[in-house]
Each structure stands twice: as C-alpha cells, then as structure tokens.
Figure 1 (tube, rainbow, N blue to C red):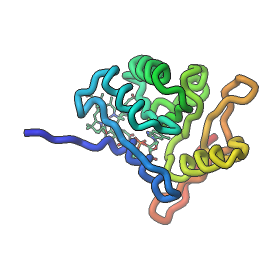
Figure 2: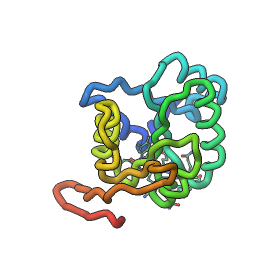
Figure 3: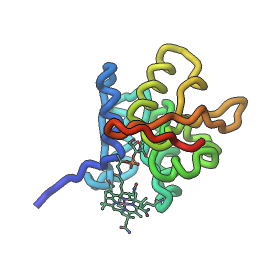
Figure 4: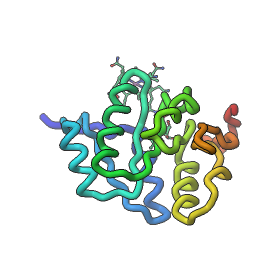
Length: 155
Ligand code: B12
C-alpha cells in the first residue's frame, strides 16, 4: 500500500499561490528521492526561490542538502520551521540560507516574497530574519491571529 503524508509545515507555501506564484512541494523523504534526484527536480522546475522546513534533529542534514541543491540552481533560499523559530540568528550564519520566517509564515512569507519581487526593502516585513551588512538581523515581531484571537509573538 502506498501513501503520502503532506508535511503540514510545507503547506504554508501554498499561501503564495493566492498572489500568483506557482508552488511545487517536493517531499523527498516521502517520495524516497536521493539528493541528486531532488536537485534534478529543482533544476527542472526552475524556481525563483527555494523553501525549506528546518527541524533541529536533522539540521546538519538539511544544510548539506540545501548547499548541494544551490550548487545546481543558485536562487535565494528561505527557511522556516521549529529550528528556525528557536534559533533565527544562528541559522542565518549559514551562508547557503538567505532569509528565515519566524513562527507562523502564512502572511510573512507572502509579504517577504512580494516585497523582494517588487525590489522593495525586506527590512520592513515583520516576522523575518535576514542579513544586513553581512550580519543576521530580526525584523519586528509579527502579531499572530488564531481563529479570531490575537496573540503577540515575543521578539
Ligand atoms: C505533527 C507533528 C508530527 C507529525 C508530522 C510530522 C511532519 N513531518 O509533518 C509526526 C507524528 C509524523 C511527527 C513525527 C516526528 N516528529 Co514531530 N511534531 C509534530 C508537531 C506536534 C506539529 C508540527 C506541525 O505540523 N505543525 C503545524 C505546522 C503548520 O506548523 P509548523 O510546523 O510550526 O510550521 C509553521 C512555521 O514553522 C513555518 N514554516 C515551517 N516550515 C516552513 C518552511 C518555509 C519555507 C517557511 C517560509 C516557513 C515554514 O510556517 C508554518 C505555518 O505557519 C510538532 C510540535 C509543535 N507543536 O510544533 C512536533 C515536532 C516538530 N516533532 C518533533 C520530532 C522530534 C519528531 C520525530 C523526529 C519523532 C521521532 N522520534 O520519530 C518525527 C520526525 C518525522 C519527520 N521526518 O518529520 C519535534 C522536533 C524537535 C526539533 N527541534 O527538531 C517537535 C517540535 C516536537 C517536540 N517538541 O519535540 N511529528
């Protein structure tokens, strides 16, 4: 019996479809893809940006994969997930990563990509980590809304 479980974290990227982006989600683990096969997949799709979910337990593995995929297709890499949310500044010390979205990404990611595409200053996008003068910096924290209730994120 075959089954594929959609990684919920990556479903965040589907929010980008609303403003017109084409999104391709590759769950390499579920599909049993090797690093070479995944790199080939990325090359064929020719994305403008690559997204990655980071967990702490396999962070070193993720770095190796991001690094190798960027050798095939050098486009900005944006990351999110539990590891980035806990260690945003440390994560951005790795040069193969350009931007991170801290905690919930549904709004921040869309704003980040729209601002970048329009040639604007991403420093004004709340809830992200990026590099300024070669140093990782956090933007202002974003207030998160859950089912009508407002919860403020800590900065
Ligand atoms: C559901 C869940 C599972 C499910 C599904 C996992 C999956 N791969 O989808 C199952 C039961 C399979 C599972 C298994 C495991 N899990 Co689990 N799991 C969770 C849980 C409860 C919720 C995660 C989730 O889907 N949240 C909903 C999504 C929508 O939210 P999110 O992940 O935070 O993503 C948001 C942001 O982080 C951001 N974001 C995320 N990714 C990206 C990517 C980009 C590009 C951008 C811009 C933004 C972004 O946007 C999202 C939406 O706003 C968390 C605990 C928690 N409360 O977070 C533990 C947790 C993630 N699991 C954990 C662990 C350890 C595991 C296992 C290793 C357990 C084991 N020993 O086997 C395995 C690993 C399986 C795997 N290969 O992924 C740890 C990770 C610890 C760490 N720091 O690395 C956590 C944090 C629990 C804990 N406190 O210990 N898990």
